[in-house]
Image 1 (cartoon, rainbow, N blue to C red):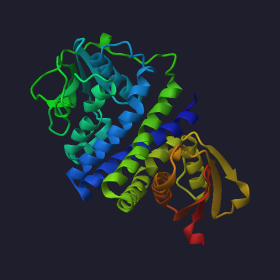
Image 2: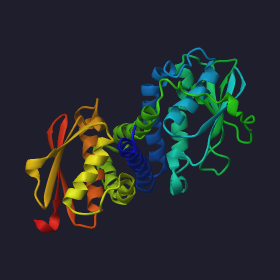
Image 3: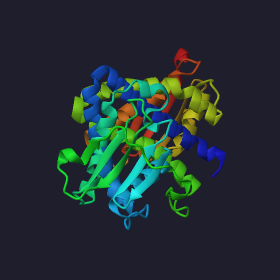
Image 4: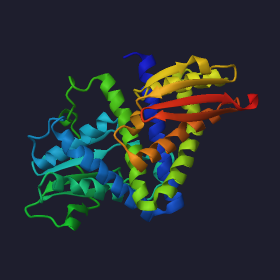
Length: 350
């Protein structure tokens, strides 16, 4: 895997990650903490139901005791997505996880701007449901430290009790407990033969993209389609504006004319794994175009869900093009379910 092929993948991971963080801040400030908690609950329950059991076999965990398997799962799945997490086992029925900083979910100053309901939402949505998914009614999660409360980071343990847990008991809080000492030799590692460097880079990109795809779909269930589209579109536009310079620098793109902007878009879109083709008969001094086929961002989606994700996602790239020194515009034509045509135009030249 060359630098030329890896940088577009990394750029896509970075801008989708930023989009998620921006949308969290947008919803926190415009809709409030109760909406944020409900959104995070729905998002992480959807992620859990989609990914949790299906990944167990891939990660080689199906033979482990449930508490240990759950803790190792969160270390492995998060590390594949670029998130640092540590594992400490006390016994076969009690195993700890500790997330280290910087936190991927609240990168940079985002940690100071989102309410505690964000973590409460994902604890209820994912961690409290592990026992249910594993058909073990005695398995629960105990949180001893949270991110927003300024302790030592998100930390807790999976525990198998000697009795069946009620729904309320599946997530508990026990502030003041400390995890066992960290041991580097105990940390689980993904099978090296399966997780090559290229696959890890793509997994990191997909990790961020899935949060956007699922996040938008679940936000609709909390605030409705129209408000979701409004907030998600302006957030995408702002992230595109803000992150153009960073992504362009990584791709060694030139902040220049329409042709330079098109080259940037073609480079970064190649990081999606889609097919990118220039359209030579659309090229003039002031206008250039290219086709994008495959559309990984909406793969498997249909109806209003597909329409929403694609509509909001387009705004990322409109923002990026508007960030150029030249006054450029970006138009997107959907040719069919699998193909888009992007056209960059010098607005002054019209």
